[in-house]
Length: 209
Length: 208
Length: 209
Image 1: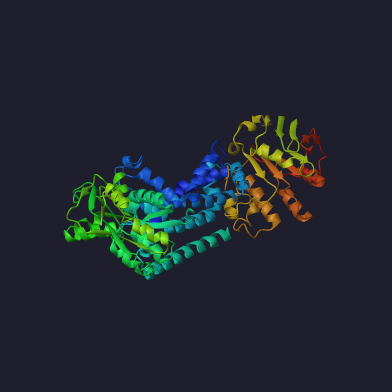
Image 2: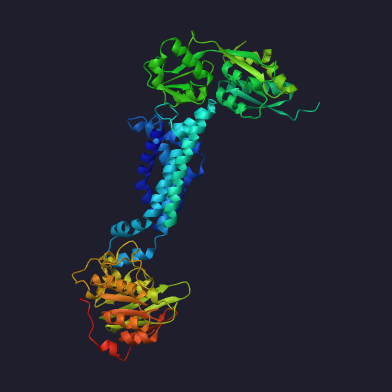
């Protein structure tokens, strides 16, 4: 179950990297009508109660949901729901960190690159992205930590099915419910150690940036 | 006569949500004492009481959860007030169902009863991996209603269309006072009154 | 080179930048106090800022209608803009060589890292980087600022033609330029020709057109 949680968190982090980086870059470098709307939408899972986000996901991805009914495979109450909850909840954290990383890349460098003949894609991959990479990696680490600890949305759409969708967080919950405090505390310790390691690594990366 | 300023805090099993609201209204009308409810899986409530959550009365969906908080119960106030029966909501043939929602069979009464029943019938091993545990019995029902589970084992009082399991376990709902007061005792007494029994029957419960 | 500014205008917070002139020169100086709009003017020529209206021609090519990366105008801005995440060699070769041979006076620096260079060395690298792409024109913004006389002379000997050279130091303009435009609070004077100094008379590298 611990390995399962880590695996799912890694998958979730991998999934949000490319769209998250793209959106972070757009928010940092471009302006358009309705940009504020996009910003708000992306940040929503961060400020809404996780169960509220979980409820929205349940309605969308349930068997009868707008998306769920068209998929041909089950999402709710499967490992896919675990990944979904983790990805959605970690996404705004990643975008926020990556956006700041992009904003800190001096536009000067990008301008010089353009005068030297580089097209926008080359500028992005040779100048912007490398210079923002420390912050982006830090963002990925934070996102991973957030995914690991995700509970509210997970319990709603993945349930807490032993051996199938139980995560560290939902297992702690069940153990507490059952009054098995000793086991709950051990799991809590594991959770804290992993989260601590992740945040610490992220801080180091951000500091050097 | 001064209306009481007190509001009674009642913790009750989720399966009692609708019926207790009506009983609460009747109680307040008769006694001018307000009531506020916390509905959840009985194991959740037991846990909260163990952790010192404030509350005046606890109505549990099984003996086990009430036993769990025995040392918090005001002596002499515990009484069995209801019976209920298990029922299957949704797809009746559990072997055909791909997913069966149960209130967590490790702890929540409805789920525990369901598991005991299935074990007795020799079906638990086969059905175990299809089980989706939920926090309380109403959540199990909701999963079926939303289409995310094919079947759920609930109480017959939760769903009028559910298929009643007539050879199921004896289900007893005990009630007890947690924080002693005249009003709390009055409430537990009220649960055994004729007025309350009529309301319980209306919702399909069997008063003891 | 024939340089034509046709009613180039840009509204800025404090004043309006206005330049309109037609001059045949190999080295145009832009002279004025700080804040007068010199850097902004260079940015407009390089394609990094768009004017409100007006056109710019370099040797009958309407460069103002071209995208930045198509203009082939080298730009050495005022502050350090060497790409910090690349070696000297990668910096210098970023824009490709456009067919020009690698500058011999860069040999001693090519294998160095970017971080430990002195001020004068950084300028040399920035200059080489802009020259290597074989631009039609070089824009130099305060290239000699803060250097001692010996270093200044070294750099001056390396600067090719044609150039537009921005400075607030009269002597630098006098040493390098054939014509000068004075700019004050956005208003550009007509180009005045300068007496040729001994430096300008010596043979110097010409950029291929």
